[in-house]
Length: 118
View 1 (tube, helix red, strand yellow):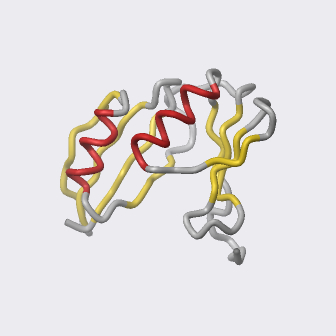
View 2 (cartoon, rainbow, N blue to C red):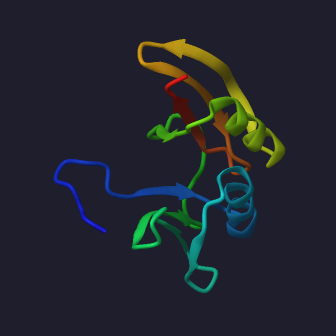
View 3 (cartoon, rainbow, N blue to C red):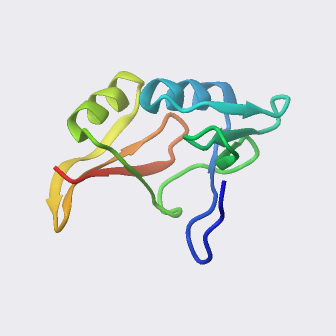
């Protein structure tokens, strides 16, 4: 895994119920985790080399924190995955210059967005 100067390198989300957060992200996006004994879960990079973020059970979740935006090749399918995993849709898909996106809250209350080109 290569780190890029001035690029987002790691995103940490609050996860008061660590297991529930892992299950949500596993079901919604297929994410895998490095387990650190229930005290923390690292979000594995898609290529399996390193981590791109983590779930912190000591963090405080909620709106108004930094917005993490996830890319999707199929926004509508991802919307259904998020709903099916128990996410709350905050903003239904909308158009913006360059694509479409929606916002959701995970079970801990963290608000994130997903965007796609179509």
